[in-house]
Every structure is written in C-alpha cells, then in structure tokens.
Amino acid sequence: MTHIQSIGLNLPGHKTSAGDIVQWAEGVFGKSDHLRKFKFLVGRSGIENRYSVIHDFKSADTFRLFSPNGQFQNPPTSDRLEVFENEILALASGSAGRALAEAGLDPTEITHLITVSCTGMRAPGLEIKLSQELGLSDNCERLAVNFMGCYAAFHALKMAHYICTAEPDARVLLCCAEACTLHFRKTQTADDLLTTALFGDGAASLVVGRDAGNGKTATKWLAHKAALVPSAEAMSWQIGNTGFEMKLTQEVPRMVEENIRGLYLELLKVTGRKKADYFAIHPGGKNILEGFRRALNLSDEKMEPSFRVLKDFGNMSSPTVLFVLKEVEKAFLASGRESAIVFTAAFGPGLTIESAMLELKRQ
Image (cartoon, rainbow, N blue to C red; front, top):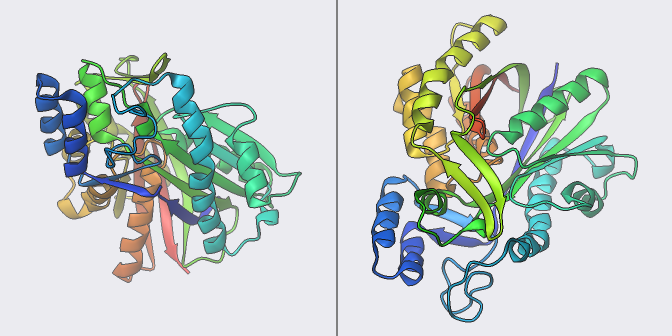
C-alpha cells in the first residue's frame, strides 16, 4: 500500500498581519467603498496572519512589485511571473529539503519528482530547477501538475499512488509551491477583493513510497473519491493581462456543503470504516469550513486543524491541505493513539471536490 512517509513545510520571509494588510489597503484604495468592503472581508475572514514572497504588503517605502515608483500600479502578468520565477525555487526547495530530512532519505534515492503550482509557470519549469537544486539523480522522472488550483495536491498524490503501485521500489517527492500574493489586482470586482483578503504564499512537500518509511508516523493511502459539481463555472482561475484572475461565486460554500457528505459516506463504505477520527479539510475560507462542519456534523475539536491553518497562514492554494494534514499528524502524536482514520478533502475550479481516506499509524 502507498504511504506518505513525511511532510515538510516552508513559508516565505514576509509575514503580514490582518492589521498590516488593512493599513496597506488604505494606501491603495484611499477612503472609498472598496476599502470599506475590504475591511469587512478581512474582519470576517478568520485570518490573523499570512506570508508573502514580497514585502509590498507591509513596507510602504520599499515596494517591489506593486508600487515601484511610489504610486500604485497593476503590473503586467509578465512582471508578476518574473518575481515568481525568482522566488518560487527557494520556497519549494525549503519544504522539499525538510520532507527528505524527515524521511531520512538522500536526494539521490528519489525516483520521481512531482511539482504542483497554479500561480506561475514556464518551461523549463519548477520540476527541472527543483531537481537540480536538490541534487536529485539525472534519471529521476519528473512530472508537473500546473494550474489546477487548490485541490491539485490530490492530483499529485493520486499520481504518486499510481506510480508506487506500478513500481514497488519508487520513492516519490511531491512539492506544492504557490505565490498567490503576486496576483493582487486593484479592480472594482468583489472577486479580487476576496482574493486579496484570503490568499497567502507557502509550500509543502511529501515523500511517498510503498513502505511506511522511518518517520514517527506513517500515513497509508486507503481510497479516494472525487465529484464534479454541475455548476462548472462556480469557481475559475484564468490568466489575465494584469495577473491571474479568480472568479468565485457566493454559491461555492453551499455547493461544497451539499456534496461533501456523499463523498465521506462513500469512502467509509469503500474502506469498511464506521467513522473518521480526524478531518483534514482545505480551509478555502471561513464560510466553506462552516459548510463542511454542518454537512458532517463536526465538533470544534474536529475542525480545529483547518481553522488553525486558516488563522495562521490564510489560503495558500495547493499546499494548504497538506499544512492541515501536518496539524492532524501533530494532534495524533499528542493523543497517544496507535492508529487513526483521517478524512481529507479540498475543492477547486470546476467546482471540483477531491477527497481521500487515510490511516495514520505511530511508528
């Protein structure tokens, strides 16, 4: 069976509090209805801190991207992607190095590398540069999952599972790295205000193999299920002239709430379990987490890992659910349990919901 052998996390160096982002917005929007709406969104977001690869959201005197001449601008997508190219490798390699160290593996033992990102891309891509930066074997097979959004970690995990099923000796390194804050856009749309209020930057990496590995815990992949909700344009992510553009309807929390219980019950049936002990739910936003809570009738304790990640880091897109899984792992180790069942889920453009059932074991 496929196992997650380790999880490594990394954050960029620029920490921004909710107060910082509001102060920054005052300079961008001035006294306007946009500022009032933005303050309302930040106040209700449940997010206290986020991190960015740039210092623009905190240091008014040293803007790097959005106000290089002291006056706010909407930089072209090419400028944003240039910053992505300069910053994403350090963010990704930091998380990957931690995952390798936790698994007790030399980089040359990795047989496959899968990178995930929806906030920047080019060819040759992150999968090439990360392989070279880490010192992976020249024969290491490389794959990239690009532009799939917040649930893309599940696609990479399924890919790793298929590889390990076909090649029993495979050691797969999976890295999700995102720089969402590069795509702030000064417009009048509610979607752009919400994006700026919710998203941060971060990276998370996993080592995946057939055996349990040498870490304190091993996480066995039991089964997965996905659902494509009929309203295909409820959430979208598009490349625009001034950054990547998110469209997010107010119906998303309701759609998630109406569909997640069916996936959960199907996975319980497939795996022969009666219930999950822990829940690692992608914190796409406070309202979405509340929808998960209602749909599965979960206590505050069960939802705490997801709300904690939202509070401390915001929504970082694809790595976020892996940050939650790390929180679940910490709670499991502190509990004294020998094993536990984990239900994990994320959603993204489509609207698509991906889910899986995992088994955590102490080693």
